[in-house]
Length: 67
Image (cartoon, rainbow, N blue to C red; front, side, top):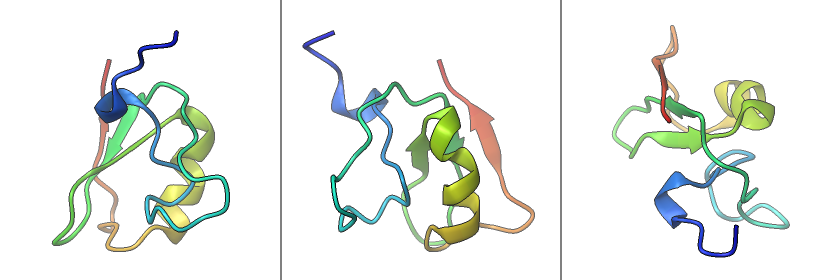
């Protein structure tokens, strides 16, 4: 896949955009709700770390499956 839609790719590991390596690039499968921030779209690999370390994640977490 060379023409991936940026909105559909993983924003992991934590969605801040300041991590080394930036976005994961894998297809996003989950959307994590966050307080006063845009939802965070992540792949299965980054779902756990994003729940624990991303800014503004609601608790209990609001997780939606995206396709």
